Amino acid sequence: MKAHDGMYIDGAWRPAAGRDTIAVVNPADEQVIAEVPAGGAEDVDAAVRAARAALPAWAATAPAERIAALRDVLVARKDEIAGTVTAELGAPLPFSQAVHAGVPVLVAGSYAELAASYAFEEKVGNSTVYAEPVGVVGAITPWNYPLHQIVAKVAPALAAGCTVVLKPAEDTPLTAQLFAEAVHEAGVPAGVFNLVTGLGPVAGQALAEHDGVDLVSFTGSTAVGKQIGATAGAAVKRVALELGGKSANVILPSADLAKAVGVGVANVMGNSGQTCSAWTRMLVHTSQYDEAVALAAEAAAKYGDRIGPLVNAKQRARVRGYIEKGVAEGARLVAGGPEAPREQGYFVSPTVFADVTPEMAIAQEEIFGPVVSLIRYEDEDDALRIANGTVYGLAGAVWAGDDAEAVAFARRMDTGQVDINGGRFNPLAPFGGYKQSGVGRELGSHGLAEYLQTKSLQF
Ligand code: NAD
Image 1 (cartoon, rainbow, N blue to C red):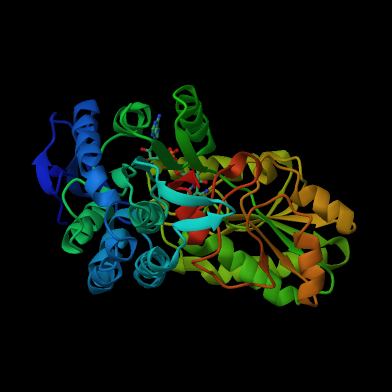
Image 2 (image 1 turned 135 degrees about the vertical axis):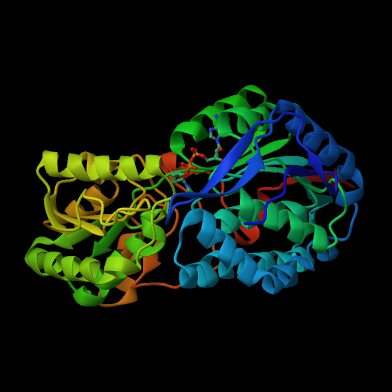
């Protein structure tokens, strides 16, 4: 697999300061496919300096021109992107083509349009209020949607007039390198976007702590997010956190049960359950519970071999550990289980648990694997109490006979995004968490505003 042996800093691929490397492994066959440099504080410093030096000229450019060319470059390279994501994340190729390569095209396109139409200046009484770039952004991303997570930060940051240093996840650096090539090809000037590959506690931490960074935008686990939030708070630095989730799929009695269960299972199994906003808790009325369990088991069994592996051995061990814990806690396995379905690759079978109670670990903690838990509720208030009964609040779904009934329930949920009766993805809808799922929003104009600060002039 193609890999750069340097960092993309100040418009060119430069050797890393040290000699450490990270092996990139294909999770479907456990083979090493490439090595990339493991950067450290010195590389981060060089990248932040380049970003700082490029900031004044970039902030002075016309917003409409900043990322106008990026979308088309991503379209032209979509096959290479899909192939690379499949190689380092393990996602089946059709999923990589449609989602991992497709969604970033939508998001980059949406920000090119927003940059051209956004009101960076407004009149308020006798004042003129300007939305100005925050400055140098340190972006730290996870591996689960390798390109989407990058584009959801870098596109709005650049559109806002900020410059960026990106530290991508250790497991998926090749997609990040492809993105750096795309930014270069899109004509973004030297120093405006910089890439440092490396380990989280080394390169990531150096970036989060760097004095020259004005805003840290982090997507990843709640544990690391808390640490980054504390570091940023101590430095009075802006921070955006997109963290974990344990979202509820609430099926009200008037809903089309078969559809709600089928879409719900597919939502969890897509990307092998490695989706922060996955509806991992399915809440079903007691009168329909047994039918829902049978439907869910059938849907998971049908998924069978179409599911990709988990990203690495550690993640697989974690997910299998949760499945064992579910059994030990008294939940009933109706599909899948902890056994490895194949000899090679980090695969876990699509797994469905019935008789899950709201306080069980599998109903409270983020598993990040292909595991769905069916929980029984007695009435709507009970469903709401269960839906809101975790520390998370990232996403969710509500199904009902009509949208108005579903909306009434969704408005009572403590969560940032809710799909009504299977609502479609909208790249302009703000995405982010209530409670411990995060601070701030990505996507659309709300995502752009994260990278802007306000100045008012009085006349
Ligand atoms: P992680 O927190 O371990 O890593 C995320 C990123 O942070 C990686 O680039 C990693 O190298 C870096 N990092 C690790 N330790 C660091 C440190 N001490 N200082 C600075 N950077 C550090 O998370 P992960 O295992 O890669 O990703 C899975 C998690 O991400 C899940 O909890 C999932 O819910 C969450 N996630 C959230 C969203 C969202 O939008 N809310 C999206 C995707 C994933």
